[in-house]
Picture (tube, rainbow, N blue to C red):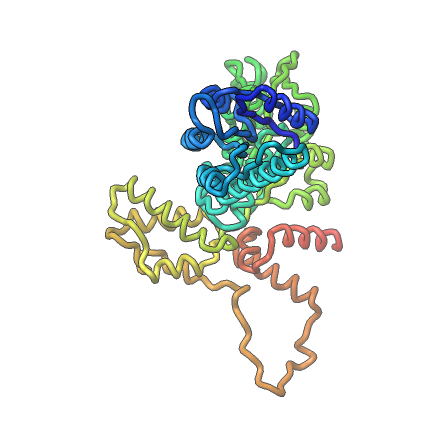
Length: 459
């Protein structure tokens, strides 16, 4: 393990011997002859390990370690001493030393001691990082401490510095734009623009202008030049939400932009190079869309580089309570109400409901309760009764059969037939809302999209 080593030794011959040993192992070495010089150098250079002689001209190595510890220097410290005693060793350990080495020492002894100290330091740093991340209840707009959300936070942090395109999937209301914003905030582009464009909310004949801009006179009503989202996001992040809704002719133009990084405004003749980090999102099963011919395969492989799948609220355990309390405090403050928490029955109802609309649905329910009621606690009666008591087909369970009885063979249907019937019933029940139907059936929306595609192809 190669490292930055600060040697604090006032005896020139001892210093030369130690530096020769350390350089032979490939370490980068700095040398200080006094404790004061070592303290200043440690603050500036930030070494991985410090070898401290016990007896120094200005003050002792023990005192130096005290001051390094007070200054929160994170280096591993090893005491070098010719005055070997149990008392000295114990005192050095109490002040933060990983180990001590008695003079004179061999290269092998120094190497083993140093390697052990560096390895212990690295393990401690990894543990500190893990502990800091383990209980994170909030992350750049997200609220949630479940293992699923901790994994999302770590993924966002790990890909933030990359230029690779990120593709965010998840049911409606799970926070796809929030994920894109978090990715932007922790990236090197955080000080540059974040521009979001919802491809499903813009009329198809205006989408090209919204994305790439236009020049004056490009079409009827184009009275001025328009920059467009891609150029507005130059240097920053461009978020294309509901990209699965993008019409085929625009997919071709987006593919060219992704390949070249160049933008040609509608009605213009000159291309302009822009530097954007692209983040895309959809609630659809994009692979099923490709297989059905509704989304270009070449564009899919260009933009589906780093996938992030946001979990539905029903799979996030106690997060539903954390999110609910956060939203309650927010809405109570906005509306000037005194609400501070939920009573036991209200909290139980929130936990039990599957929330097919995810956080967005939860927001609407709690806003409704805060606006229409008063009090310190939100009670069960303040929550929309029909909503929280809605029957879910997937949770209905057949009455247990009495021992010794069997269903008639004529009532048994093939599994594929029963599956199709249940999916179509759920879609009819939800008004063809695939994510909500999937929530009621307790399956992934992509399963329904795949089944629908297969049934359509089968005629």
